[in-house]
View 1 (cartoon, rainbow, N blue to C red):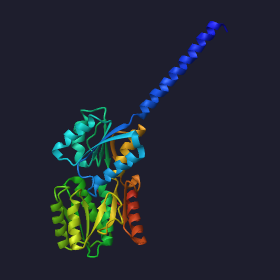
View 2 (view 1 turned 180 degrees about the vertical axis):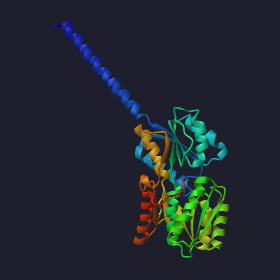
View 3 (view 1 turned 90 degrees about the vertical axis):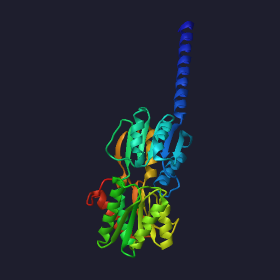
View 4 (view 1 turned 60 degrees about the vertical axis):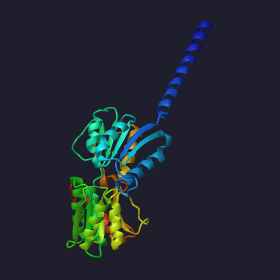
Length: 328
């Protein structure tokens, strides 16, 4: 090989090495950029319910991914401010999560203005669709049926109650299935169902719970956010008990005798996991029992083996289609 050829070859190898190094640095830099996540929690992140469970899921995702995820959160807003809050989040983030079905209408509205941003709705309902929106159905009615069965097992008076916030189909359907689940265990059980018109109204939820207690109810179930405080006040005053929702917190408060796990936090983590992996998909997706115990389950605190076996069988029958429930 001539000296000139050798020098040209050497320069070519050096340039190729430099180019490869630059590409590697570029790839590493791109990978190092954090995923920007915006999350709207319209209620209080300490409500012992839907919002707190979702916040717990966010916290778990942040712990899992560290500086690979950068989070902007907006909490505790009025419905009238939802569009503005989501616009704020969408203008600064790659993934926006709306917590609660009450965010759905605004999410679809704002998503049209930000086609490159991915939106996930925790508690999304089937129906409307968009190429950049995912709706995650927690299937509250399904686990409410199991909670009703647990309530019937735990009631000493033969009377139970349910208090929901907004009287919308998903919340009403959960209430109906709670009653049906209870009657599957005790056909003669007395069941009271009330709606306050507001997930966060403490006074109204207390009033509704006291009214149910006056009719003999000693076990209460709910789909409430901050309004749960009112149910707690009523139950403490009258020495009755509550089946909690969303997260298993057995052993933390003797007021609660059981918990239905409706994994809103699991859905928040799922949305972030999928975005981090680059496998996020738009569309309606059912969660519920078929997604495993983190997504949906039922536990009686200190329950007997017989109670656990009965609940496990009910959940299996729901999965196998032997028991059918309403949507929501």
